[in-house]
Image (tube, rainbow, N blue to C red; front, side, top):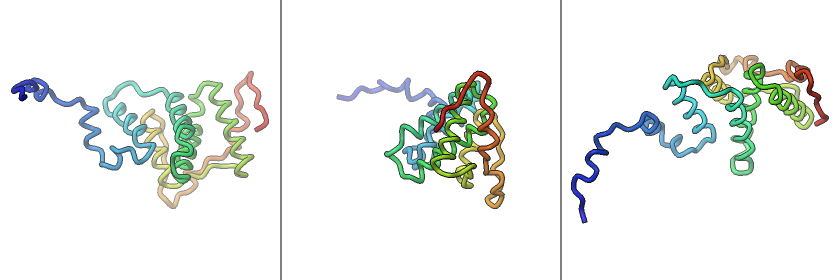
Length: 173
């Protein structure tokens, strides 16, 4: 049975901005082929709508949780990108994180140092570009430099492992 004119009013309304922007994303992004796509898209929409920026500590939590929730369900390369970007964001946002998250971040660096035998994080150019986009969404500036400028993508652990907030103690990893 046909119902003429049943939806005429609906068709006249413009689509919400979020829907319009999502429709303009490349097909691979819209299908969520990359775990960062939805996070970056949401932050990008908020940035362009000039809404209040997301809380930095919530974005940090989202990045850390993204790595935990997707572990085992994604390729090792994508997991490494999530891990690296979330650690990089921890470096960039450290001074704006609550003390408890600062301590958790320092513990994370210490575990990484112990279990992976490294004293710094080096981002690939692609990881640095993702980090830059996430940082921009919360109004943190980060210049990843050009591909040959590796020093702009290196974060030394020693700059942070001794910055434990007063009243907190670290445990051995």
